[in-house]
Amino acid sequence: MGDGERTKRPAVYDDQATQDERVVEDEETLADPLDELDAQLSRLRSVADELRGSRGKAVLTGNQVELIEDGPTLLRAYERLQEEAKREVRVLDRPPYVTPPSNQQQLELDRLRAGVCYRAIYGTEVFESQDIMGVLPELQSAGEVSRVLAQVPMKMAVGDDDTALIGLTKRAVGDYHLLIRSSGLLDGLIATFEMLWALSIPMPALPFSGDLTSLRPADRDILLLLAGGATDDKISRHLRISPRTTQRRVRALMESLGAQTRFQAGVQAARRRWI
Image (cartoon, rainbow, N blue to C red; front, side, top):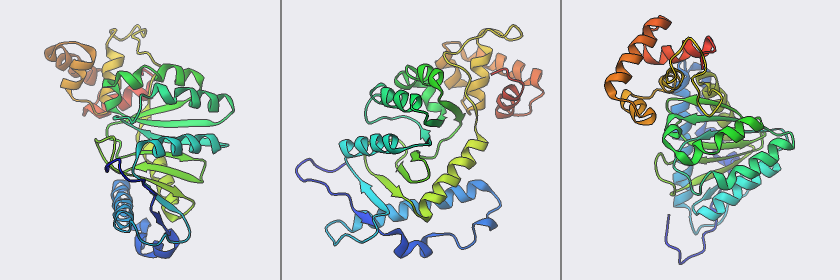
């Protein structure tokens, strides 16, 4: 983020003015859904770059997209998105976090009690984040429906079908976010979320347990991590078991499930309700 000596005003982008140039001419011709995801991310980065380059110029009309570059504005925008949602909040989540997830936990619990549905897709990085793993059990118990995916491409929250807040950086807390209101871009983001929801697998009840008699105590944890695309090294560190033990158990689980790949083992386990 920039220096703290100047007040930052969100740049504003008129989606309607340039939407035709940003939308892929025929999205249905993209056979691979991941190609559509790449196209969507490229489109969003192009919009963000244009906004960054227009600082200090006259604000365009429409206000469909705003550039957010400071933490307090970002947090308030996320809170407002949740407070204004009447039906559903969709979330793509992964570390790092601007503030500890526990600081946002109460607001989500309040909105869940108010009848707002929360659907969240978490990247496998969350398994190594004590911050998020410390709040997930209570959120799940309160009604959050969560899934896990090997690679979450960006951080995003969508309130109903009206507003989205996205982060376009992969590993840094700061840099920039976009606040997107009803537009062609928002429709594309909602479609992206639903595509990722279909590709992800259910996250089991937390905290993890090994209460299934047909599995060893750590097997459910291993299968969950496999489904999320975790490496043997990540599994070993997360479960505090040796790499050799991890490799042996992974092979045994794949054989018992008749799986040809590690990810397939996790999917098969989810279908059998082992995780």
